[in-house]
Length: 176
Image 1 (cartoon, rainbow, N blue to C red):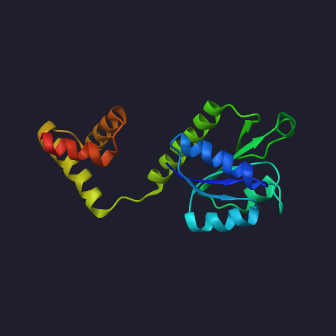
Image 2 (image 1 turned 60 degrees about the horizontal axis):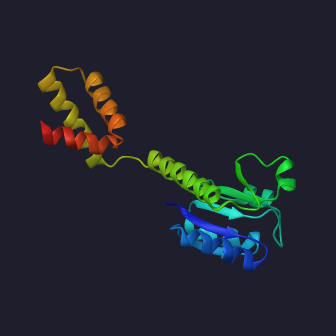
Image 3 (image 1 turned 180 degrees about the vertical axis):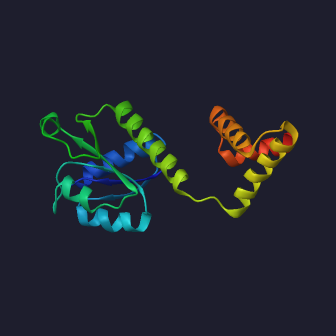
């Protein structure tokens, strides 16, 4: 799960949200009362989810969103009145008063999407590339496939099983 930073103008509110998340198995990397503190904290993390209110002592959530790094997603917790105004693009919102399951489901969904995006961006190591090439070579040799057919086969097996393409290639090698 991605790192979570909680930002609310009142420390009691930030602690309440943190405690709620921690009780439900979500690790919180830090709590802040200002946008500046949050930005400093985010610099040390590199990516994650910012759970915040509408207004802080030094800025609005829109200003914080503009200054956040690309590896972060924002979850705004706000009243119906605030949400009735246009919420900034790229911001996920949950209406206050909170429904715990709604908050947790939303954070889990955002964390899953962030983790998936991180996996896709990571380049393959030479060893991982070699494993994939070896699996394709075995398929080409044993099943008389072209390289393109072998690659598509490994890719499809990977998607069907829910494993990474490298894990699938390793399974093919061990079976053949």
